[in-house]
Image (cartoon, rainbow, N blue to C red; front, side):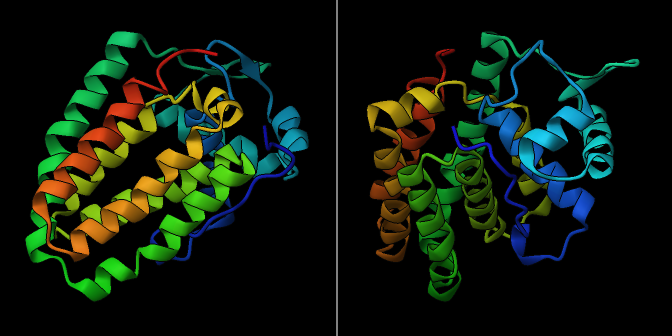
Length: 223
């Protein structure tokens, strides 16, 4: 796994504080399964592992605790919260109810220039998959999908999906990298953009249904 240093992204084109960027990267590591449920991590240990200083890590983990992603353990650090298979199924079901019809609707409404602006993020996803960089993969994937949903003009919808994505866990990503299957999933983002630009609602629905199915199909198994 790529875990030598945290990439610190600027999500959504907005300038974010160092603490927020550390939180984004730690959240991605948690979602990707690099930080394991039930394990206790100290801020200094995480800082050393990911090549950043301890203070912003401690502050970022407190932010994740407010989101319910970790619990504080006095004098020890932070424990990653457990997520049950039932919860993961429920999160994925909610995402499918929101994301599939919203994305299909964009085939008829989204500005082509705005869609093309997401292509660099889609390519970043492919590059991260090819490199086996799971943290970068999750970060770029989040940026792409939330950026796409934002084109529907409903900020609350984006917030809800963002929260569902934060609470999900993709424990099988490492196995996908080793099996050479993550790259094909990554390339679906480019396929989706092409279908949207072609105004092909059926193709968009097919790609989105297949893509979200991976979350609880290929990615659900704990490695």
